[in-house]
Length: 296
Image (cartoon, rainbow, N blue to C red; front, side):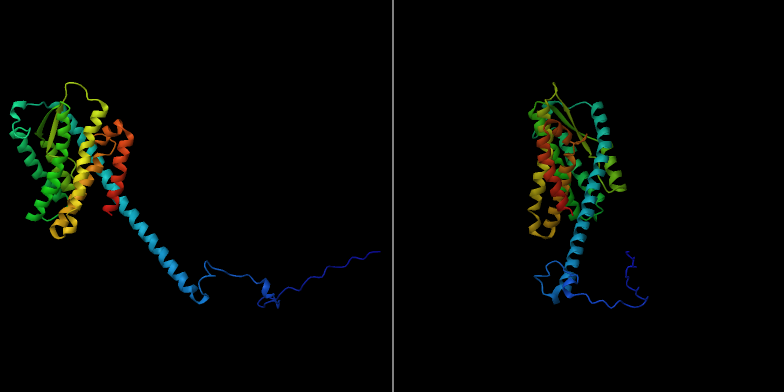
């Protein structure tokens, strides 16, 4: 007969005491840290602290960079929104107007005298209103810098379009735009942004322009603004007022190029994108990245 015996069980350890069990050292868990085999044991705490500080710094740097990029992207989108609204007003006014200057009146470098007056006044207004929008002091030196680096450069942007428009046998005329001047003043005062310009260019063609021709014409403006932006960078190493002028000129021209290449109407990038997407991407993407890094 087989008799059942109760299994032997260990007595429970009383609360508040520790069981007297010897664990062989070979079975104890081994705690390791990265590079523990390379860094001496006594230096591990310092290495761990240094790594934590470095990681914190890297995270803070990227956080600051992302926040800065977010601000720049928001600024461009805000300009784009304002540009869409003013563009609709501009297109409406262009449709209502007509060219009143005869080609025989354009005796001075291809412009009529009244067109030159409009360009001169427009240059002064653009520079002064950009100065006001940036909340800079109205000092003679700063006024001159903004007129040259802002007003004159934006006029050159428009003249680049004008050159190709005339080259493609289009009739053109530069006219003063009162509503645009008012919009510029109001947005510079209220929002610190300039969403319009004090003149417009009427373009009339006897036949519809081909897609590739129109795309090249629209690309000429951002291309000249990009060239002017990098020429302005050459002033920065000179220091002093030249450095100030170079930075202002670079930022204003780069903003103009990036904004105008956005593929939305009335921006010039819409026609470039429609003509050739690869050309548009090759122009816009590098400029956008450069702008983000240079304005952080």
